Image (cartoon, rainbow, N blue to C red; front, side, top):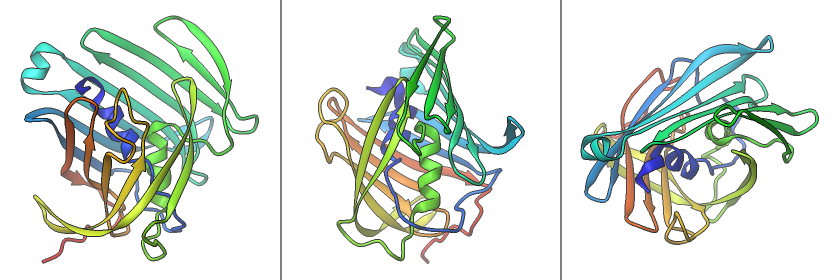
Length: 257
């Protein structure tokens, strides 16, 4: 379960939908996480945003990179890279890239989104194949979903028990995701005490997750809406990710004194 930690992290923090209007991030943002699997420091994951364009449209080029560390890196090397090109105004993805190496297993795919016809063109660079799939309107990829939702969270109008849904397309499948807002909490971090919004994503129990509500996500209760901490009870073991470093935030990071 440690092999695709970046994918798991992004998967479980992409579930917080609201109605905020002010953008939560800007180009130049960089977030870094320490990830523990059981007793072991299993990985590091970084997410950054760069200014770019695609088809003459300005986009946020968002890059997620995860790598194994320590003994895991010796016995099971992991290098995962995910990229998305997110429309600056509409917050929809135009292109998604997945380039992963996990203990010898590789995957190299590109997805191109046609939002007019709701068709995704999936290029498998490893197998040299091209497949087309229909997707639901306003669907996000695995990376773009996090940033789309950060812009939509409105901490002032959230009520305990609120449930939110989002359409996603990843690899070659459509997914329907839902999460529940469970309240606010102050947590102790390396930066100090941080007030957070707490969410429980509904995940499918079985091969990956131990139970349907076995994941908890703490999001900063400020205009940045950055993931501060993630805990997941997995089918085998548990995973904890904590924000370790950051720079380039659009808004002040609120720390309680």
